[in-house]
Image (tube, rainbow, N blue to C red; front, side):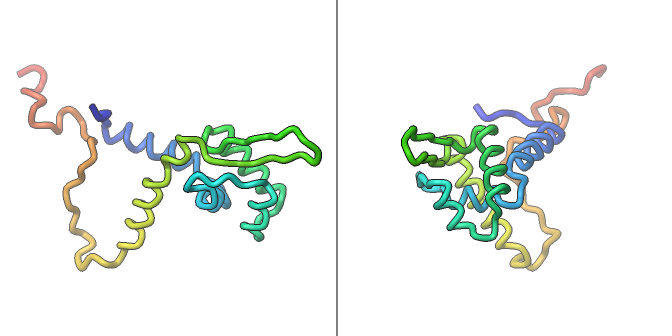
Length: 137
């Protein structure tokens, strides 16, 4: 059964999710790791040449601490460290694809004020027709 959100809890949940993805390079890192790719730190450095080593390390650590990225250390000489997405991190792919599709639709609608009904399970109990009579009736 889907979780029932109020407008407030839905907004808080989305805000918390977006905070996990805040950071100049986090989304770029994620898109490089989607699809089950396992990349060494040096591969990520080459794939994202504009990021500094310090910033890449910082963003990867944050993603790891948030449970989105897994850091795999191979104890060998020279040291080998690889990064991949956790299952939870990989589950972001469809959500980000949907967000990308949504962003691409901007300006396509002839009437931007036309708001079709949403399929989301958001609403205050008083907004539902099955909520019954108001208290005190």
